[in-house]
Length: 268
Image (tube, rainbow, N blue to C red; front, side):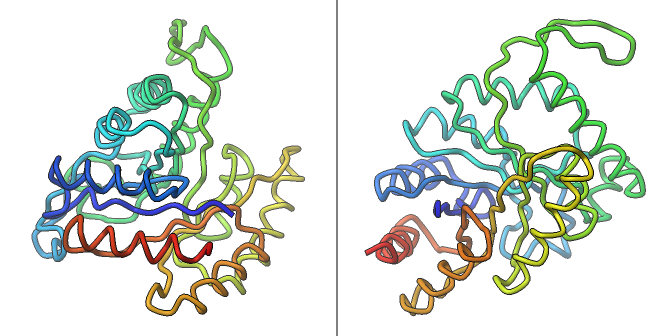
């Protein structure tokens, strides 16, 4: 099973120096992927832990792509209705091209009402807007020439499509993953729940005439208890996950390095 780790693209840890060092440490340690998150307009009463400071995820990954060579680059999740569809797909393709096809796109519909209000996007339309973006993304990566809003255009560069993992809870996210995605990206889901939901996902894929993808689980491991952490990873793998992304707060790059060492020790 692949192991990834979340970098804090928010708060005091999102400075260029700290982000670059953490990315370099992650790559040197041998984790498969580094991940960032997405918030665009945090209200003051919900800014604990970040101070409202969030670096845009696609910009952050583009910058980190230039600071790394091998490690894969994930966003978990990009909130699709926050951004217009065609520019978003163009940014994804550009990042996939320039990073050497290392991108993993976690995609979600969002939940935070204040952010939708700040953007002037009706929260009630988030599902339909997300589906439209996913539909366009799949069409763009499948064709050099695409039609959108009645206009044909050339979609280039057109690298290999990055894996698109649909975030969110069942059943809606599973239906969306079966129709548009390449896998499912649950957050904080216990191993004993995963297998059941993956069976439901496989059923939705069969209805859609598509093969199911695997699950990437985002959560936290008890790194202070290596035995329990190993057992947790084994349980996720047995339940059908092919990747676990460990997340958690860290004070600075030195603190992040200690956590990476503990994570690397789980494979020993």
